[in-house]
Length: 502
Image 1 (cartoon, rainbow, N blue to C red):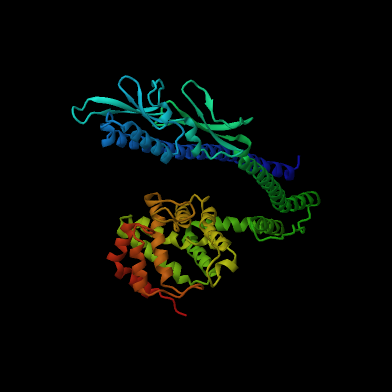
Image 2: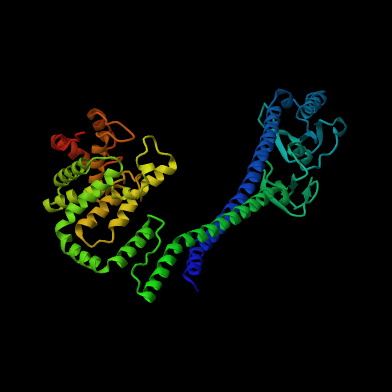
């Protein structure tokens, strides 16, 4: 199996499978939330209806309580009052639009007044849902009972039934009342009335109608899943071909050289990225292998003596790409040493940070000039590309075992992190940010604000100091800000000594 196919399969394995699994669990979770929201909406609707019904019944009970205590009721045995009370009950029934009657029954069970005049004088044998005693105003003894015969059909006034959603009642013995029809599949919620505990109100909805939105969601989720999968496949094919093509050319050239021993052969180089650099290095190695080996030995011998100069020069190169002067990295280096010294780092470590800090923006060498030197505000996409320089700088330096370059890698990686955790590239917070990164962040911002850039003019000292104070505990380590202002004269002296001269 060729490396091209292996690369494609590997890319698909590490991208497509996790993508499908993630989307499946995300879709399932979202669907369950939709199911819950549908049921929650039914419960809310049912609660509102029950509250209205309970309030309605409570109002009736309050009215009956008022009637039972009225003067006309306490004189109930007065001649001709039965008709007057019955008329009162009849009017109340009409006012409340009730189905069912109101009764006044004496202690022997005889109806002495009723909203239905025809029942006066008959024996009362019903079991109404509500009653209230009537007491004598003279000795406070019970003289009669006011009963409410409340038909459950009254509750239908509160049922907003449709062809897909309906209310019905389940009474104490489990009998279902006022159910218009039964759905083949349904979702239902139920709850008892507070004023009529023996009654359970049910709200149900046709399941196919309730879940229609979920069906639409499933369709679009599937479409999104397929489109995303196709994009991943196309990306994998494109990336694999782009990645493997230079290696294939390099491999073919190497085989030809091995067979022919013709060291004049060169591999075609069409890019300036790492693979392009590999091709160039390969060509150089083939054309001058002995010289290259001698040069490598010489460079290895000189590394320890020249690494500080190399670090500084590389930092200056990184800044020069964005039209900055070499004095910027010199000033940042001195500011970093001063902060490190007053923070309490040893003299050796402060000096090492001074030597490492010029590399803080080395990652900018990998940022396109069009973005790096743009005179206006970055777009969101350009800013995200620009932010990559911190990671790129770290990637360039992280593999070194040398103490200085390790420190430079830390500085490059963390000098844009913020004390409040809102920096980049990793969003580190507080003392999770290495002290090298915290120091370089303050030193870099102080110098950058006071220097002309392609996208801005230098700030005044007053404006710079105001910003640094404002960013204390937000962008910058509070202790370092305090050190900065306590020893401000040292920083200003360095700035004056190393100021840019155009």
